[in-house]
Image 1 (cartoon, rainbow, N blue to C red):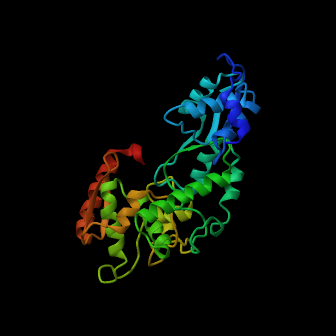
Image 2 (image 1 turned 180 degrees about the vertical axis):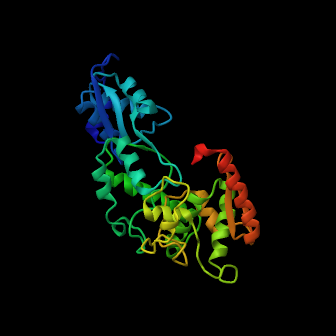
Image 3 (image 1 turned 90 degrees about the vertical axis):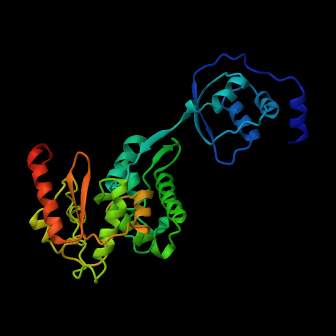
Length: 327
């Protein structure tokens, strides 16, 4: 620090006596030094002088770690009280958003807008150009790349900041799973399907195997994934468990895996780490079918043959008949 600063530290300084005034929102920016924070506190009228706070910082052991963010403080605080308040997580203003695995893009954006009070239009604008956000060239939207997690956003973060942070979390997960850049879109796309179709984390690995097997012409000649979840996504009717005959016959739906063979064209949800891992490490087996036979417990039966699957479907139908409230 400068000679003038050292001189001021060695001399007695003015400090408030600990009483506090009106509430003041105070921001610690990324990269702010202790000197900058002390000066900003003084300029905001939170502490009486730069020296009062900076002197306290220098003599406090261990050295305080001040986390960037927006804090709720008061005018006329003693340096000691101000430092204690900045070290108390309860005073850091955050907008907490919980994005669960499998949440669809429009719902993610709505949750973000509702929790942060940033206009939904700002988030919609922020996701308009996937490639500008670093997504693979195949990505036409950011669906699949908004990582599901619990976030604590600062009030001074913009919609662009938030979207970029969530996408960065997805790439961290892909890097952690050792997914090569050339495979990122394929893995996220398949993981989004596994996330929507599996009833539990344990089942994800079997579901991933079923869809992998259906892409193997030696096991499944049609190459059709035949997923109701993909048809529902493309038709916009994602609030239903099943699809209609008409929806499954709609060839204009590019997500219709009953008619369009091969891998799913694009993600249908935002998957988490478990779904990604399941795609990379599917269970070993020759299953070609699966059906949930109990929506309350998530019990799912996996089958290798059409006859086995037909028997499982009978169990599913019986359960539905006994539970009309799920219709």
